[in-house]
Amino acid sequence: MTDPRPPSRAHDARIVAVVSVAHGCSHFFHLIVAPLFPWLKADFGLGYAELGLLMTVFFAVSGVGQALVGFVVDRIGPVPVMLASLSCFVLGALVIAVAPGYPVLILGCALVGLGNAPFHPVDYSILNARIATPRLAHAYSVHGIAGNLGWALAPVFLVGIAQLASWRIAVAAAAAMAAAIGLWVWRERAALAGVAVGPLGVVRAPRAAGGAAGSSVAFLRLPAVWMSFAFFLTMAVSFGAIQTFGPEAAGRLHGIEAQRAALYLTVYMLASAGGIVLGGFLASDPRHAEPTIAVGYGVAACVALALGLLAMPGWAVPVAFAVMGAGSGIAGPSRDLLVRRASPPGATGRVYGMVYSGLDTGMALAPLGFGWLMDHGMTAAVWVGIAGFQALLILSAVKVGHFARSAGAGMEAGAAAR
Image (spheres, rainbow, N blue to C red):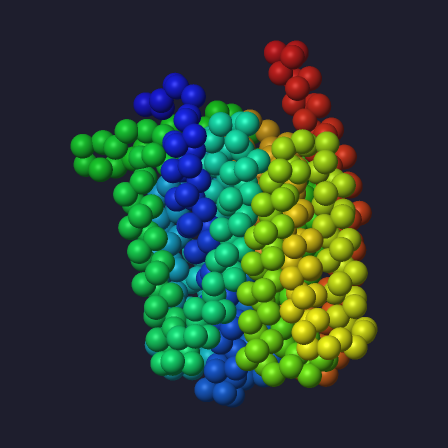
């Protein structure tokens, strides 16, 4: 039975901690192979397009799964789905660690992508249901920071272990980390679901309101959902290029060795985490959402263009990554609030699943297109393309905000009529 008392700060902190660490783990696994490209390229004789295909498989599986799994989350609850996801991370990482050739690498990436699919509908279903509304923007901020820290940790963790031992041991160590986080989620499963644990240790979440079969796809008629999908797809193409090839492209353009440049992704992620902290305060006022997103991505686009077209001294390149990351991070909590405003009651998992599948779709497309540019030596075009997609986000944010406000007004009018 759900506890009727308003949640305390300690309760909220406990929920946010578990969800955020699991979210950080999912972001860590976005990069389970990208930082290891130099080793995989050498061991398996792969080109950049083939390496990019590994990321495409990951995000294609994740994107299709994410659009579908929102229905599962709304029906059976988020906690069992989160546990299944972490199990897929463990299995997929172990498959990659023992891969004898390229096809098994693809299989491992597909399994990890399957594990990644549920995380946004799972996380936001828990946060929106279990966190007090006045603290929700800050919960989004911590959640986003944890994701960025997962991204920041992955290159240091994987490259560090690969240099000390081997890339296979590095991936196996990642599997052990996911298993440990899965045990923590299992221990906290009752708190996350908001129900008591039964005599056999089973948690059964209450069914969401508005989950009737006839209305289960009604949310797809909302323009705000599709504009949010397009926004996330555009954002993901830009970020997917930064994540997969950005450091190496910057290294080639500005004369920086590949292993040193790979660490600039960590600089980007740490700066983005700092930006999310500020973005969490700005998102407390919904009126600031669109301007915050526009300023954040506008700054990021200008810096990306400078990286592609201007000569920079070596010290300036990590600074550019930091500024670009901070700009993107500031926009994060406002972006999440826009999606929440567009979500009808009882359809949180489905809406977030559909919208965030745009993120995976963009991440699946980016490695193929930008990998082709890298293979053909067009490294400056990589950064010009990144800047172009970031600039498109400004227009997209305005449209998403317009449709989200319209959707919110429509839901309020419907509630008043009833």
